[in-house]
Every structure is written in structure tokens, then in C-alpha cells.
Image 1 (spheres, rainbow, N blue to C red):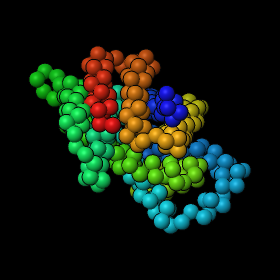
Image 2: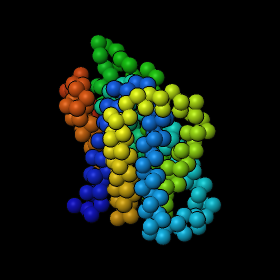
Image 3: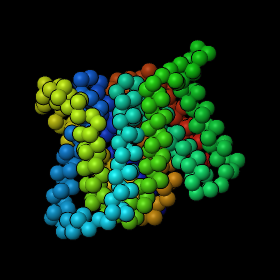
Image 4: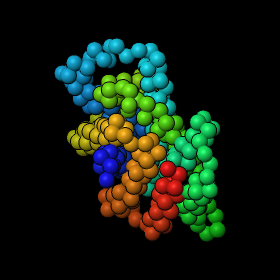
Amino acid sequence: MNNWAPLILLSALTGSLADTITKYVFKHNPKISVSYWMVISWIPEIILLSVIILSTGRIKDLIAIPVFVLVPIIIVSAVKFIGNKASYTAMKFIPISVVYILGLSSTVFTNILGVIIYHESVTPIKIFGIALVILSIIILFYERHHLRHLFNKYALFVILSAVFYSIGWLLDKYFGLNVDFFVFRFLYSIVNMIIFFMIDINELSEAHKAFNEKPKKLIIPLLVVSFLYFAYAFAYMAAYKNGAEAGKVDAINNIGVFVVIALEAFILKDKTNLLKKIVSAIICVIGVSLLV
């Protein structure tokens, strides 16, 4: 096994666990807004990153970040903010397993962008892989001779997030190889906070009031989610430094969909169309793997 493969497996596990806990919070606390949860889950991570940066002398690296690196960090942070908000908004209202399976289409968009931007090859295997991804989505949504709910706004939110995630995957490897992880993650989190206060500040008051209604029940999930997302990002960025290719990182990360389906059934108690979800996920993961 490649020395970066365990890192990707760790990334897939921590990411899927964090998303499932987030879905659990949304399910039991509908007044908590998506943007508010995103922001408060960054706060513990920012505190942890600040301690690491100050205690390890990385403050010099932070201050010395050149503009030609800072600007792309701002861009990728904005891109991922849009992708995360679209994905979490969908996650709040539709099953998380559906979000994950639809989200696998990000690899399709990554390949399409690779062809357009980098003139990468188009092969029959890749075309077959894309066809399998489309088939998996049809299986997931097909019901009584109709593609039920495929074109509702939340499914479209997931597809939108997949487009932005694909752009993020293309940019992440550059930062993984060229920028210290703790410095990059700190700047990424701060930029996301700034974006929230620029465009979503109106959500703060009501959502904060809802959080304060159950602070003891929400603080532990908040801290766990923050740690898991930190571990998720650390693992896949470390994989890049250990020689992983972006496509393989994306593909192996997709096994998280099976973790999510299991957690959805046993923790969220949602076993609706379980067999259909499993079959769709298997076909989709096979299709995505052919695109690597």
C-alpha cells in the first residue's frame, strides 16, 4: 500500500463522520442556520491553529506569505465557502447519503475541467466512467417511471457544490505541496469567517439564539465536528506531500459514501431506500474510479 493511502482513508472516515454529526445537528436543531454552523465550527479550529502557529514559530511564515500566494488562498477559500454552503444547505433538507452520492459527480467535473484547462485526454474508459456516474444518479432518483426529486433545488445545490469542489480539488494540491498546512488552514478559516460576516451576518442573531437554547447539547458536537474537519483536511493535504495524485485522493475519498450510508441507517435512523442507495453508491464509486 502507498504510504499516502492510509492518510486518504483517514480523511474519508473523519470527513464522513463530521458530515453525519452535522446532519444530526441540523435534524434536531432546525433553527441553526447553515452559515452559522459553518462559522462556529471554525472557531475551535482557529484557536487550535493559532496556538500551533505561535508555539512553533510559524508566525514568521504567516507574515511572510507573498501576495501571489495569498490571492489564490482567498480565491480557493471563497470557492469552497460556496461549495460548502450549497452542500450543507442540501444536507439540512435531504438525506445525507443522497448528498454524498450526488457529490461524487465532483470527479466528473474535475475531469471535464482537466480536459478544458489542461487539455487532458478523453478516453473510452473515462466516457464509460461518466456514464456509470449518470446511471447511478438515475437509479437513486428513479421512482414510478419518474426521476423523482432529481431537479428539486436541494439536489441542484449538491450539483452546484460538486462543481465548486472540483475546482477546489484542482487548487488544493498546489497548496498541499507549496504552503505549510497550518498556515494555509489558518488563512483559509479566517477568509471563510470574513466571507460570512460580509454576506450572511443577518443570520447570526436568530441562529445564535437557537444555539443558546441548547448550549450543553450542541457544544460537544461542535467541538467534535471542528476536530474531525481539521483531521480531514490535515490527512488529505499530508497525502499530497507524500506523493498522492489529486485524482486518486478524490477517488479514494469517495469510499466515505459507504460510511455515510451506514451511519445514516444506524445513527440517524433513516433506512429509506437503503438497498437502492447502496447499489447506486457502488455503481457511482466504480464509475468515479474509472476517471482516475
